[in-house]
Image (cartoon, rainbow, N blue to C red; front, side, top):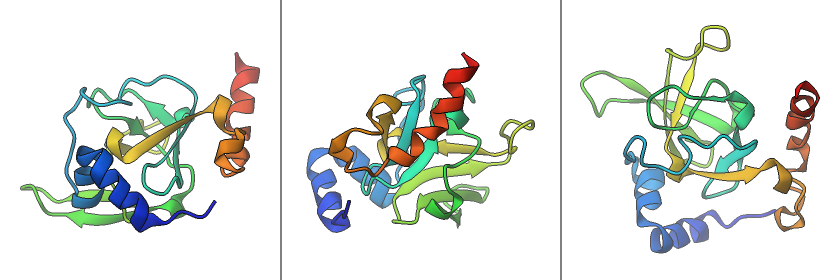
Length: 156
Protein backbone atom coordinates (compact mmCIF):
# COMPACT_ATOMS: atom_id res chain seq x y z
CA UNK A 1 0.00 0.00 0.00
CA UNK A 2 1.57 3.27 -1.15
CA UNK A 3 1.25 6.18 1.30
CA UNK A 4 1.64 9.85 0.44
CA UNK A 5 3.54 10.79 3.59
CA UNK A 6 3.21 14.56 3.15
CA UNK A 7 -0.54 14.25 2.58
CA UNK A 8 -0.86 12.12 5.73
CA UNK A 9 1.13 14.68 7.76
CA UNK A 10 -1.14 17.52 6.57
CA UNK A 11 -4.20 15.42 7.41
CA UNK A 12 -2.80 14.74 10.88
CA UNK A 13 -2.12 18.47 11.39
CA UNK A 14 -5.78 19.27 10.68
CA UNK A 15 -7.45 16.32 12.39
CA UNK A 16 -5.19 15.79 15.40
CA UNK A 17 -2.95 18.79 16.21
CA UNK A 18 -1.61 17.07 19.35
CA UNK A 19 -0.44 14.05 17.35
CA UNK A 20 1.08 16.41 14.79
CA UNK A 21 3.08 18.25 17.49
CA UNK A 22 4.30 14.94 18.92
CA UNK A 23 5.17 13.19 15.65
CA UNK A 24 6.53 16.14 13.69
CA UNK A 25 7.81 18.57 16.35
CA UNK A 26 9.03 16.09 18.99
CA UNK A 27 6.52 17.02 21.70
CA UNK A 28 5.59 14.56 24.47
CA UNK A 29 2.14 13.60 25.71
CA UNK A 30 1.24 13.40 29.39
CA UNK A 31 1.87 10.10 31.18
CA UNK A 32 -1.18 7.94 32.01
CA UNK A 33 -3.36 10.27 29.88
CA UNK A 34 -2.86 8.59 26.54
CA UNK A 35 -4.63 5.96 24.51
CA UNK A 36 -2.34 2.93 24.70
CA UNK A 37 -0.43 2.98 28.00
CA UNK A 38 -2.80 0.37 29.45
CA UNK A 39 -3.93 -1.35 26.23
CA UNK A 40 -3.78 -5.11 26.81
CA UNK A 41 -5.20 -6.29 23.47
CA UNK A 42 -3.12 -8.42 21.11
CA UNK A 43 -1.99 -6.77 17.92
CA UNK A 44 0.66 -4.54 16.42
CA UNK A 45 1.45 -0.86 16.74
CA UNK A 46 2.24 1.01 13.54
CA UNK A 47 3.51 4.49 12.65
CA UNK A 48 0.44 6.77 12.79
CA UNK A 49 1.64 8.64 9.69
CA UNK A 50 2.77 5.86 7.35
CA UNK A 51 1.40 2.63 8.83
CA UNK A 52 4.88 1.11 9.04
CA UNK A 53 4.91 -1.78 11.61
CA UNK A 54 6.90 -0.87 14.72
CA UNK A 55 5.93 -2.83 17.84
CA UNK A 56 3.98 -5.94 18.86
CA UNK A 57 1.81 -6.40 21.93
CA UNK A 58 3.93 -9.51 22.62
CA UNK A 59 6.81 -7.22 23.67
CA UNK A 60 4.67 -4.61 25.45
CA UNK A 61 4.88 -4.43 29.23
CA UNK A 62 3.82 -2.16 32.09
CA UNK A 63 6.90 -0.13 32.98
CA UNK A 64 4.94 2.10 35.35
CA UNK A 65 5.98 5.15 33.31
CA UNK A 66 2.50 5.97 32.00
CA UNK A 67 3.49 5.55 28.36
CA UNK A 68 3.31 2.43 26.21
CA UNK A 69 6.57 0.55 26.80
CA UNK A 70 8.10 -2.23 24.75
CA UNK A 71 11.30 -4.22 25.28
CA UNK A 72 11.79 -4.88 21.55
CA UNK A 73 10.69 -3.76 18.10
CA UNK A 74 9.11 -5.73 15.25
CA UNK A 75 11.99 -4.91 12.91
CA UNK A 76 15.04 -2.88 13.92
CA UNK A 77 15.33 -1.43 10.42
CA UNK A 78 12.06 0.48 10.99
CA UNK A 79 13.47 2.45 13.95
CA UNK A 80 16.26 5.02 14.07
CA UNK A 81 17.83 6.81 17.02
CA UNK A 82 19.51 10.12 17.69
CA UNK A 83 20.81 11.90 20.76
CA UNK A 84 18.28 14.23 22.38
CA UNK A 85 19.87 17.10 24.33
CA UNK A 86 16.64 18.91 25.32
CA UNK A 87 16.98 18.02 29.01
CA UNK A 88 19.91 18.22 31.42
CA UNK A 89 20.99 14.66 30.58
CA UNK A 90 21.30 13.34 27.04
CA UNK A 91 18.64 10.81 26.05
CA UNK A 92 18.26 8.55 23.04
CA UNK A 93 15.32 9.64 20.90
CA UNK A 94 13.59 7.08 18.71
CA UNK A 95 11.82 7.83 15.48
CA UNK A 96 10.58 5.70 12.62
CA UNK A 97 12.60 5.51 9.42
CA UNK A 98 9.89 7.80 8.07
CA UNK A 99 11.02 10.42 10.63
CA UNK A 100 7.96 10.17 12.88
CA UNK A 101 9.04 11.06 16.44
CA UNK A 102 8.07 8.14 18.68
CA UNK A 103 9.66 8.75 22.08
CA UNK A 104 12.87 7.53 23.72
CA UNK A 105 14.70 4.30 24.46
CA UNK A 106 16.25 3.62 27.86
CA UNK A 107 18.43 0.83 29.26
CA UNK A 108 16.20 0.11 32.27
CA UNK A 109 13.95 -2.44 30.57
CA UNK A 110 13.39 -6.07 31.59
CA UNK A 111 16.81 -7.63 32.19
CA UNK A 112 15.52 -11.10 31.27
CA UNK A 113 14.57 -9.78 27.82
CA UNK A 114 16.58 -7.09 25.98
CA UNK A 115 17.20 -4.73 28.91
CA UNK A 116 15.67 -1.95 26.80
CA UNK A 117 12.57 0.16 27.36
CA UNK A 118 11.14 1.79 24.28
CA UNK A 119 8.98 4.51 25.85
CA UNK A 120 6.56 5.63 23.14
CA UNK A 121 3.94 8.34 22.76
CA UNK A 122 0.53 6.80 22.01
CA UNK A 123 -0.17 9.66 19.59
CA UNK A 124 2.71 8.38 17.41
CA UNK A 125 1.06 4.99 17.06
CA UNK A 126 -1.98 3.35 15.56
CA UNK A 127 -3.01 0.00 17.01
CA UNK A 128 -4.04 -2.80 14.65
CA UNK A 129 -5.79 -5.60 16.62
CA UNK A 130 -4.71 -9.13 15.71
CA UNK A 131 -8.24 -9.82 14.41
CA UNK A 132 -7.76 -7.09 11.78
CA UNK A 133 -4.29 -8.03 10.53
CA UNK A 134 -5.83 -9.90 7.57
CA UNK A 135 -8.58 -7.32 6.98
CA UNK A 136 -8.86 -6.39 3.27
CA UNK A 137 -8.89 -2.68 4.20
CA UNK A 138 -5.16 -3.03 4.95
CA UNK A 139 -4.51 -4.46 1.47
CA UNK A 140 -2.39 -7.30 2.86
CA UNK A 141 0.06 -4.91 4.52
CA UNK A 142 -0.09 -6.65 7.92
CA UNK A 143 -0.96 -10.29 7.12
CA UNK A 144 2.63 -11.46 7.73
CA UNK A 145 2.25 -10.47 11.40
CA UNK A 146 -0.57 -12.93 12.10
CA UNK A 147 2.15 -15.51 12.84
CA UNK A 148 3.34 -13.43 15.82
CA UNK A 149 0.18 -14.45 17.65
CA UNK A 150 -0.18 -18.08 16.56
CA UNK A 151 2.15 -19.37 19.28
CA UNK A 152 0.38 -17.15 21.81
CA UNK A 153 -2.87 -19.02 21.06
CA UNK A 154 -1.19 -22.39 21.68
CA UNK A 155 0.16 -21.22 25.07
CA UNK A 156 -3.32 -20.34 26.37
